[in-house]
Image (cartoon, rainbow, N blue to C red; front, side):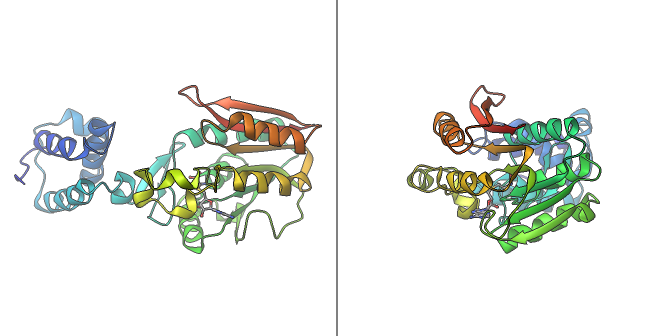
Length: 283
Ligand SMILES: C[S@@+](CC[C@H](N)C(=O)[O-])C[C@H]1O[C@@H](n2cnc3c(N)ncnc32)[C@H](O)[C@@H]1O
């Protein structure tokens, strides 16, 4: 591999390595170089002639070796942006996705409209991106963040410390809402929703934890279980926000309406127009 002399050379090199694995290779290359130089992406683009020092060059080549094997950029960087904040990510947690920001926005809207309702639970917290974002945005909120994975909860704790919100959060290792009786004003969850049989074919399953992806035979196993548990744990007024897979809207909404006949249920689209967020409101 040739030694990069300048940022321009390094960007080209990184883009070439990333291209087979990423639809956003150019942006990813800029993000990598911004991380290595401690500058912004804008600075990297504005200084194509700047030289990488020796240690930056060594780290670039180490990163490119991992990226060439298909390892996702966030794991290589050890951090990723979500809802305007940087989160620690390790292979113990799902990489936070932009679609999940819609869930945070919907929960924030509801919490702002209901200032007396501050008991929130985040089920399957992973990196803690949902729980920590809500805690950072809403005063007085008290959030219980649950995950079955102790390693994920460790990463989530680090993220709460990083963003100064540890006092608003409790971490529990549990199977969904099983140990609790509620009531919760808001239930948030981005649970695994990929049908088990599809997992082996998906590149995502090569590096991200199976426990974060496998949603059982039709992908909705955990969603159904959570809805049944929430049935007796959610307050009135109360809300539930659940991220689902693109093809799961009708079935998930049908299940929610059957279990909560008194609730208003809707499925909202993501930025690509795919139905991705099940919202349920009790008044
Ligand atoms: C799709 S990831 C979502 C992580 C994070 N909330 C996000 O939006 O990026 C699902 C998470 O649910 C956790 N999980 C899977 N099954 C669970 C269960 N039965 N009870 C609690 N957590 C579970 C996984 O360990 C994983 O961290």
